[in-house]
Length: 194
View (cartoon, rainbow, N blue to C red):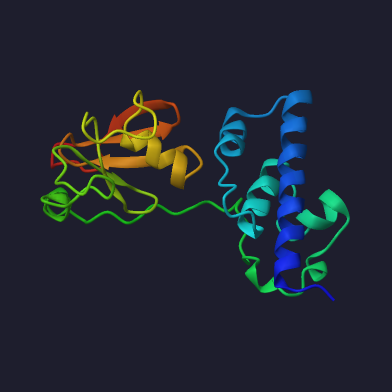
């Protein structure tokens, strides 16, 4: 009988193989850009079921049968860590964080808040609409891991597989990030004139 450590190592090997299979699939058949992006920025530092589910969704496998379809093994083969498997598929849409009912309330909620990366009050805050993190937008003193990219792209890569939306309250716009591309959308708040 294997213990937790052996099961974790075996599962890491399964995830590594699944990532290899996904890259092999991408080399042979066309893969949507969003899936390539998800694969490129997959968090492999914690190779457990969430990573396997992410790769499974890229390979178009269902969450419940990903191990069976990919390798002919089941979750029962990992009894000591089977409880780590999430119940929801990563294919489900992730809900955006709710915004305050009025634009003024949004401004009040971010005014004076500290950037989660540099720890300073951001002159131009960007509020991640997926996780609620507040980071700096366009601040030369608060860059991402690449000097050519800002915190918004860096946060999107690290936390959301390169894709997220930010509310830019001081600019009254929404920033859409699909790393490394970005685009601006109109503010979801409107006045009496639309």
